[in-house]
Length: 339
Image 1 (cartoon, rainbow, N blue to C red):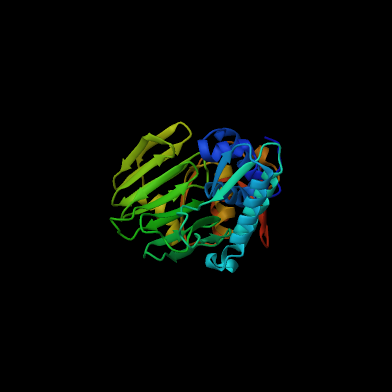
Image 2 (image 1 turned 90 degrees about the vertical axis):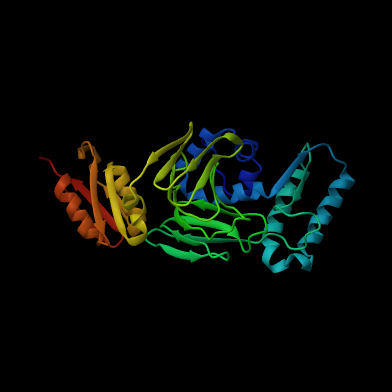
């Protein structure tokens, strides 16, 4: 896909993107697109949340009905019952999208529901917590659940969970210590997969939407592919589900290697050059430039570092892999040496 989108609305209006979010179609194309356009990742995730908060009904409608619908939306934007200051931006975006759809050849009506009944007076207000490269954080949610959020990761969740379930959306990696509540399952959405728990602790690595890993430490979780009720697995402690495009696979995992990031312990296990570079850029907020990558040869690197400075790590790798490096502020240049 070579199409470039400049706004969330552009994505929401794309029929192929709607089918991807609502019907799990065109997954390969859209996963490739977001991989090829990393600068659009936040916009991509916001568009997914927007579509999930809108109901589409395609039909021919009269001009008078179009005008009434637009007025109704505008009135709701200014209705003080909905907390104008808090949700105005969401409603404004909905109104812009509705306007663009309304004046097309075939009109669409769009009903904002955000998982609420018609008679509820308070719209769902979402919050977002994120970490840039080089930063990790610990977040305590309203229900007592603790989220350890890794670098270059984002969680989105409502300000207050409802009475039936606790749902959040993850992009990146996080470790969850879920507060037990038998009446309200805790659900983490990562792309087309969902992980459901009642009271447990587990790690989700969703940096790569095509190769998601869910690792269970305590309790029990149900990992499922959205829209495919038959394709799910129940994990027990010590088990990891790898969510690949073709389905779910269960295996054992090393708790130290998978969870070490929470304590500043960096593990490489048979990592390629690109994997090492990606992880170091994320952990230390640096940018690498490899001058002669064609001289790198075959890579398979394994090691462990406990809260080390990046220069210590690079010196260790350079000794084994035969390269020299130069660090200028956030930029690191690497040159491989001839034997």
